[in-house]
Length: 248
Image 1 (cartoon, one colour):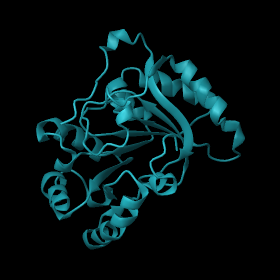
Image 2: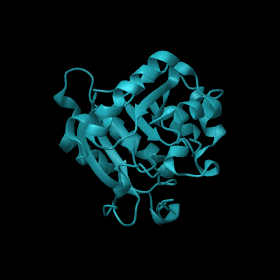
Image 3: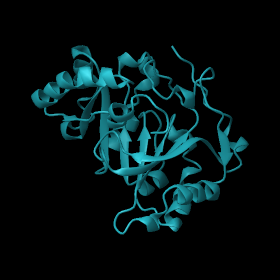
């Protein structure tokens, strides 16, 4: 089992956020796939899955050196990358990801407020479904991308399964649940463990694999399972397009 770095105690941050990387791309997964998006990846995680493709955000052996930024600095960086005035219509989504961004939810509302003041309007958050979001976050996030972990993650169930969190997010109108799958055992686990908490039309299956070839090899089987079970399918579009290249 990987042991992730959860970061220092909250008071050490002094209102700042540990940013691993910021980049402009498209949303590669979930309901908003293909939508232009600016990703803010935060450092640290509370799980550390075996198949994680962003271990550099939390693993001591692989992690990037995060930099603590004030929210205003992050907002200004987004302006330099993809200013809202560049688009006549909808501006790119802002995707808060990690790691596990809810480790920093005491400071994220200030960042979202700064970004709204700069002209950004739609905020996605990607979470592993183990940390209860506070009321302020529930009100500020436009769309929740929740990815509960199965036993194929290598994480003990008592660490990765939190029914209170799943129920809190599942009752929202602006949430989906993405499950990484590779075999029938994964599908049975979704039904037996999560079926009573997550609605079928909220459930998305995504092939396991952090490289292009693995994704392409697995897609056909996962699509057929979605057709049979009534789930939605989501590829990892960025992986298919750019393989495992960072910042894409």
